[in-house]
Length: 177
Image (cartoon, rainbow, N blue to C red; front, side, top):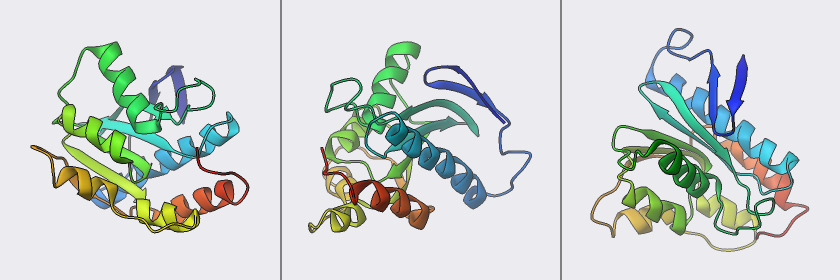
């Protein structure tokens, strides 16, 4: 069903004809982000994936690559934004939705402000991740977006349990960062 054309850009059967309703579409694209988070682990990185969608079509994907690129800022979302803008020249993403397997960190949330992202959908929350790591957590997106001059619409908790499974599996054997 998926065909990788080049890193970041993919083509596959779109859900528009397969699924009806925003909830099912959100779950479809979130499952892609979670699958990318698993792929990130297979490639030696941390379990985070991101999918960028416009008009019900996937336009770009990315997985966390902090270890393979030797760049601690190459998170799934930040890397996606950086590469998409660089490769397309499009830097205003108000008509796009970004799906992230886990709630984006402060840095990635800040990048979403600067590119004027229209909508963010994530699986597990940052507070979920922090609990797995043994810390207290907060909603990083809420902290950033509520204190910024613009922010995307946000929906959290989509396929949360599936996302948590991947995070728990990875972080039971690895330290963060």
